[in-house]
Picture (tube, rainbow, N blue to C red):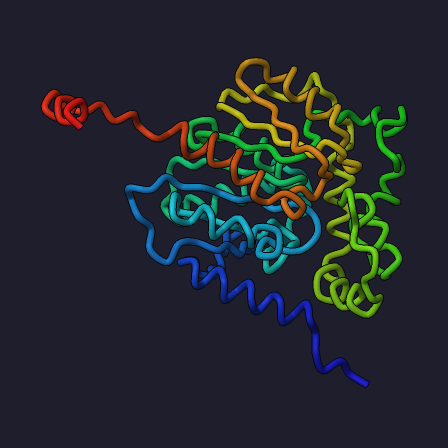
Length: 317
């Protein structure tokens, strides 16, 4: 008997409505080389606002991962939220699976929308893409936020016990769950306190909507991340960079956050979200926004120096 109701699909409809009510619209950009990119862009771009790009990680599509952040950032930025290649409605017929290719595709979408300078926030896999954007497009990317993304990992780390799982094929089975049990295993890795009672039917419904398309292509993305990866090959990006990490991250251990801070030196700051794991965007959304606000908004806010007559009036009061 065919399924007549999907809670996940209904929730997706709510997110689409939420994005639309936040002043964003859904767009499709054909890059002309066999690549098509979906992106949420401002319905009306305001020139006085800076531009902000939110790049999602593995798992659900961009709407699900950034839904709670978008409404907080829209008042301050022109916000752009793309689906990376092989996620949501974005895809390619080209064979390249590197984060460098993903970065180029996203930047081409920004160019198509008339975006010149942009700050980038990358979550997990999206952090690899954001870092690559900053390295490739130094004149266009102004500020970078890397959230729990192990861009400093080396291929040898897999065999030296840094991760709970060292086999990339098993990593793929966990990050792309096809059964309710594998979904529970993924939740145990990403949350400090994963939900204890979730019916298997709800987990399978989520899998059916979010994890059944482009499975092999996404596994290729995972393999490409670690292949021949060496810290000595990683460029040092020049942009001011904020590194945000969950204290108890089991996907990318906190050591990789410290490693990235050492790699970038004084150009970067590291903040650790206490009592949270890889999914701190879900566990501690208000704390994440506090750090984003401090780095992206408050540090750009000009200091207002009152005129002499204003100073006298202030003193008189």
